[in-house]
Length: 341
Image 1 (cartoon, helix red, strand yellow):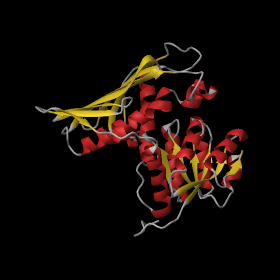
Image 2 (image 1 turned 90 degrees about the horizontal axis):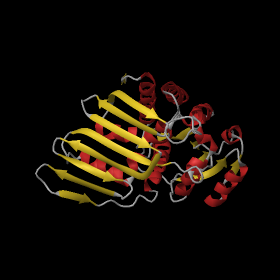
Image 3 (image 1 turned 135 degrees about the vertical axis):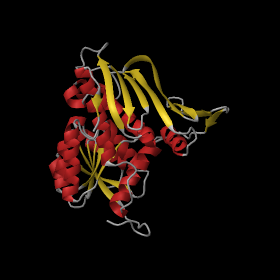
């Protein structure tokens, strides 16, 4: 579809597959937009599907079987927000049914699965977008803007710390499926494909990855609670990611260093500041995100499907994030550096 000269009043009807934490959040943000609407809610737990439909208001059909939703001709697109290990098959089935697809991160749990999904989208002539939303959150978008504008010159190092305590009695970690690597892919897939995508967005493509990972505090989980990843980028830049769900005093911050200065952000405090060589520290005003980033990606998906406008995040972005997570786990397992193709 070619980009139209003027936007029409068309509204994209979307079927939501998966009405858990992320799915219900997407439904809530969708309600704030004019160009996209929730037309159907699907979950194996009918109670969750009905609750999501009722919260959205209006006429929202309820399904408990994906196949039934996909046969609904009035729904041209779907949003997949199911557990990580189910993404590949649901996306492939939706594409084959002629639906355009927005898939939550991680795109899939292997690079080969991502490639299969991208190929299927091309073969069926459908659109496939991945929810790598972190780069759009206001703190991170401000950092990306500063880097793109050359405020710190050419960036040559990025360090990211994302650490918290995993609470299994409330919130997303209380879901039983998240305790198994086979379901989540591990911490890097469940959480840090976001940071890998952000790193790429400011530093470019990765050349090699080295990682260490271990489980120190939760033997009831069969995967790591702390991981350290180092990245060498193709242009020679360096990156470090430390991620943990075993840290009582949490931190969500980062430092990007360039030839002309450096930028520090603190997501928890919603702050961004930078300092150029021989200059003073500058505090950058950052608006609270308050769902704006999710609305941005959903609006972009609608604009792509309805008007052919380029999406803010592509399936290739989702694929590259999975590639880095997969390489990091291979490095930790084989105790060696992994080259990225």
